[in-house]
Length: 83
Image (tube, rainbow, N blue to C red; front, top):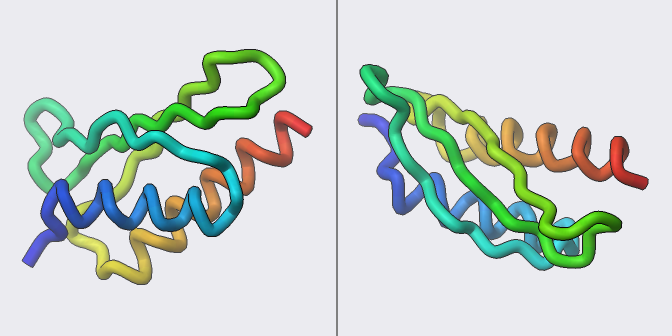
């Protein structure tokens, strides 16, 4: 059973908070024509150039731990790029 958009949003917010990124999860939305894929839009406060927005694509068919790892990897890439 696919993850709900609420679950995807919660996972993204939790991961960003654990990485001390002060997130505001704006939305988790399915992509057009693809119900098993979602995009999460986050605004991260404290970036060098505000506003700092990030879109993370995740598979809703993934397990919660797999979704968490995908979000963690994307956030780590973002942080490394903006140091």
